[in-house]
Image 1 (cartoon, helix red, strand yellow):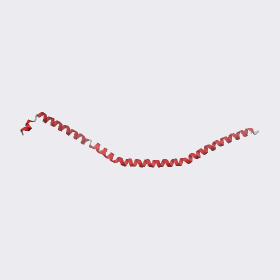
Image 2 (tube, rainbow, N blue to C red):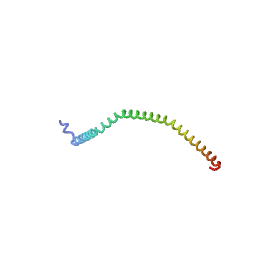
Image 3 (tube, rainbow, N blue to C red):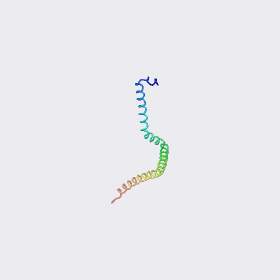
Image 4 (cartoon, rainbow, N blue to C red):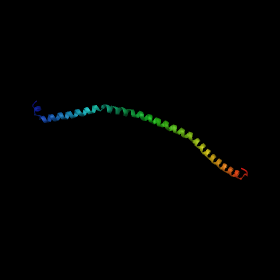
Length: 105
């Protein structure tokens, strides 16, 4: 009992200050628990979201490949059409030259 009386009052005040600081820290941590629980929920949902995104990317690749395959013949047809148009233009040029040589036209 006398040992407790021998402790200087300044040490007791300092201990209460330290205890108060610890209590404030615990209070701040418990106030932010909502933020932390939302973060934990988001981290837990991340693998499912990642799987969903991976699946959608794979589907997009399939769609792009199908579109590419569909466009290949169209590209060839347009190239052939362009060649035909150039040949027709040359033929019409020759026909114009022939028409100029025909008297009365």
